[in-house]
Image (cartoon, rainbow, N blue to C red; front, side, top):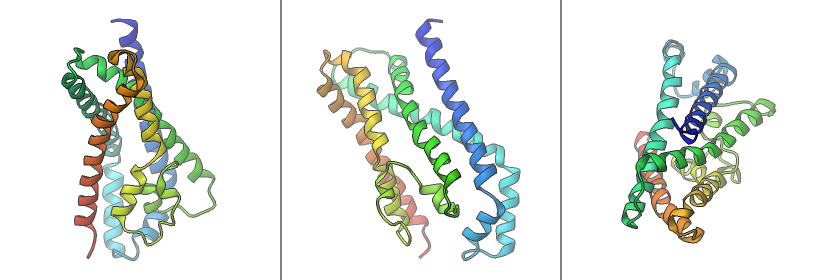
Amino acid sequence: MSKNSLFNTGVILFNIVVIIGLTVYINEIFLTDDVIYKSLGDQLSIDQIESIMGMSKKMAWLDYILAVLAYLLKLIIISALVYLILILNEIKLVYSDIFVLVSESYTIFLVPLVLKVLILSFSTNPVTLDGLQFFSFGSLLNIFDSDGMENWLKVILRNCNIWEVIFMVLLAFQLRKYFGNDFRKSLWNVVISYGGGLLVWICFAVFVSITLSPT
């Protein structure tokens, strides 16, 4: 195994460890019984809440598996989108090389996760399920007052953040050598591939949010 492969494997394992660690911390420190009762008390009965809590505790291990699977799936899909745009540009490159570059650039998304945990840990405001779900440092959602805001709008504003921009810039910087060291062309192709995929994901998430929202 080459040094680059070892390094990339180390990056992926590091990211997985951090993701699992943050998920454990959030579940154990923030997702307390009191937070669940206060957040769901107006929507569900006590028996329903207790049933949900009991199931959540029994299936806690599933949260960590899903977090890792979600991370790996994102890497696979993003790599596929970038690989496709390179094929359309008649650039010969193997998928595994793209996967390496994507996984390295994707590490930037650990920063807002860590900041989220730190901010919520030292915040004097009470933690809520809504806050845990939608809080994202560096997003447009932080600019507006989200109280009473529709969930579909929160989804859009949360995904419009500085970290997506930084990720695209980092990935374009790594891909520039395949575009004759033309950073602008590299960035444009990243925006088309990843940015297009992100837009589709936001539309899907908004559709699900509207469909599942109570009438």
